[in-house]
Image (cartoon, rainbow, N blue to C red; front, side, top):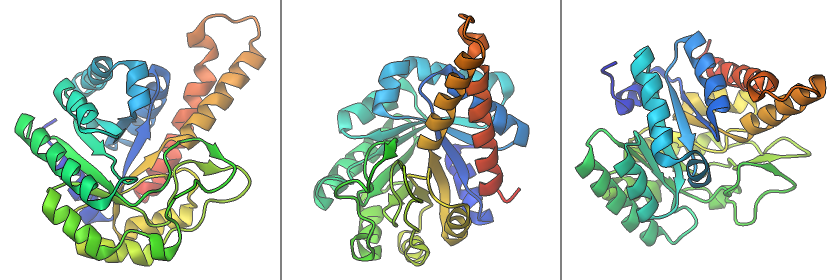
Length: 289
């Protein structure tokens, strides 16, 4: 497999489809995601947040994805999702991650810009093919079920990422990808649909930035909004909470249906199957299948 991740993302941008990005906490989640991607013959990005990679092990996550990529000659890539410091970004870059998300969305603009620039310079010096993404606009932090919109999340029109800010940020940092606030949220609201996202603003930001854009907080967004967002300029879409919910439900079913079973690979089957179903449905939607 010769194609670089950035080329695959740019190809998606050109074709107005989106690469699915799915977070994992363990090998069972990875198994479900990879099965769905293979079935549809589509590239996929696996994300690990700081907490997830601490749980799995940074070197172990790299080894897992590299082994799948090499064994199957498959376009599967590993992203250090939501990295909140230069030191944690450096750690993932040095370990061999394919992609880094430096998330300075909740700090002042200039501080975010300076640290992002530093991450880009370090990453490209280590490996020019590492993809670096930055965040501009705060959308909350946790991939979980929410009682209410997170405090400080920028979902009203006047607080969304502004085109002139995004243009300056991209130009001065040299990032490959940018994740703006367009009304999206991390996590899923428990009692109602997540708020609609601002499609008009996505188009404005795409024109201002000139680099592929990433939609975080995909769980809880309506199918209609996904389709419109991809058409408007989103080239990578992150899904995490939705997978976690499906995974947990699968474990519950597996244990309820087999109360005497103690072999994890047997009672985890339903959890893996649930993850595979969610990912397959999302990948079909993102790729107009």
